[in-house]
Amino acid sequence: MCGRFALNATPEEVRAFFELLEIAEFPARFNIAPTQPIMMIVGGLRHPEGSNLPNRHALLVRWGLLPSWAKSPKDMPLLINARGESAYEKAAFRAAMRHRRTLVPASGFYEWRRSGSGRAQPYWVRPRNGGLVAFAGLMETWSEPGGSEIDTGAIVTTGASADLTSIHPRMPVIIRPEHFARWLDCVNYEPREVADLLGPVEPGFFEAVPVSNRVNSVANMGPDLQERVEVMAAEEQAEASKSAAQLSLF
Image (cartoon, rainbow, N blue to C red; front, side):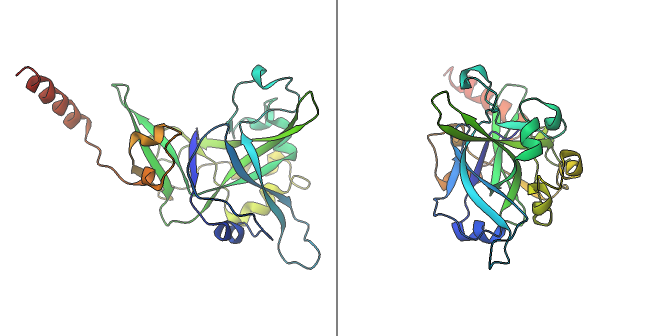
């Protein structure tokens, strides 16, 4: 799954990577969590008058998709992820897969490796060569009974690449720049015609950096969350705990 991610890039870097005509200023965000606003790129192939750039633009949506048919957010689980293998057939995601596919700018994501003791070691998973990535996204606009509308979205996931499965079995789907147009074009490409884009990236594309468990709290939002920490092997952790217990007897 993908439950936390970051967008450290500048507005200009995002604008250039996604070939946007313009983009509003935004701050670096190092610990983006569900229900918070996330950026999504939407648009098709039509070129605006006088521009050689695609007709794409960025908007903010609530992370946690609400299907248009949902009567109340309280009636729905928090749909932050959609499984790429089955999203096209699930009632909650079917319409978005057909009509509202998006891209989610990201610098990387966080994932937790759980040990037999129940402890969880967080990792900052980032492109090995740096830069931005685009997660596959889905968007829905939900109308409140009072008439106001809320744009909501989910990140599409797939099975993890072989080098990341020891941390977690799932990861976000990465859409490469050469496939942006096809993924975003919901007029000419049906879900079955973009299904080939929903697999994991090749091993080695990402590197996983062990980080502090400070990332567990949404209240922590600084760049220090992505600093590498030393992780002891399980045997060393067990030995250290045993030694500490013995010393506490004296």
